[in-house]
Length: 425
Image 1 (tube, one colour):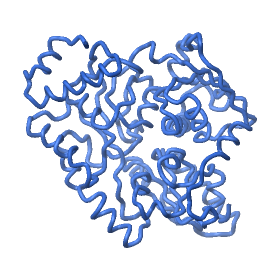
Image 2 (spheres, rainbow, N blue to C red; image 1 turned 30 degrees about the horizontal axis):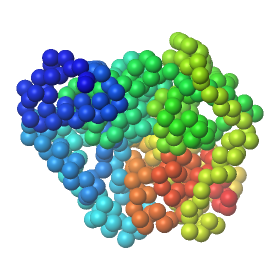
Image 3 (cartoon, rainbow, N blue to C red; image 1 turned 135 degrees about the vertical axis):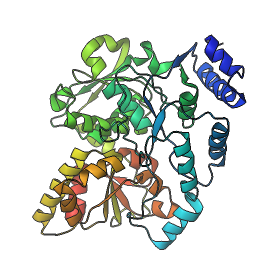
Image 4 (tube, rainbow, N blue to C red; image 1 turned 90 degrees about the horizontal axis):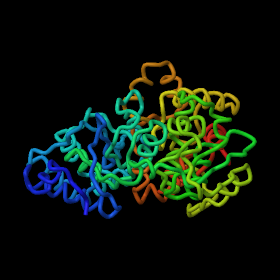
């Protein structure tokens, strides 16, 4: 049985009402299922929730939120939320829009009203990359979080050195409401040690999404200690390195279940502790050019017509950074110039957080990107693809997360650039 403090036991016994007692009981049962012996305080300033979509079928979620509000038990922290599922700027035909608005996300406005009453940090704080400077929800090293979004959890743990388990949706708000989470797994020193050594022996900088995919599928939920990647990323967590690790980590988390990785000479804990983070019986996985090519070639293509012309391209799952938007503007311009085209030949959507898009609009890059025909949006591409009519479309992406969870087809960044500026594959 878990050992609780007097304060925690009092909440469980109903001192703060029946609703909070149920929340604490749920967290205790959750922790005991994973062998947790105690609860620890959530110490981050903000929380982040994974459930951002007003899906018609999520009645129990709305009932839970109402119970929390009626009990006067909003989140102890302001919070950000994953991306919105709808944006009228993203191409969709009449039937797709009917399904989106009337059969899938008809409760979106209602749910967003609940979120604001519960403690949403800003009316537009909808993004999977809440840790971007523009958004303002970047945890500090060592802080204990109650997050569930897999790509954000792995980034916070690995790049920022915060501590968070891969929680399920709704557990995130529960931890924030009572202010405690069960102490196990990636919250513990032992749980953050690596049981895999990954040796990078490629002849060029590996594609972030492809490398993350390979590692995720190999180590699954274990912690990898990656050697040799600092050769390509350097030893400082600058904007370029953080952007790479954002996309890399999302692929490890979705193609496997990685919640933490260490990059030798680069990520905070690896810099501090080095190989003492590696367990004695750690396995070794060597990644070279051939291994990455093998992984890529074995991705399933589930389009009905494998030779279909792509109808849509999504970039930004997880959401793109400000620098990525700028860099891709230049890449698209150069690609179009080389091809002799003025606009992209495939409808293309670049997604980023509302806060990042707001900053992007202040630059001359925004008008330049718009001139290429590329659409910018705050949407969640995965939520768009969940529409059965969208799933039937030949959609391309360089996101391994989107590839994993939907019918979208993966191509590398370079291959995507060729397709959207020149056409063909």
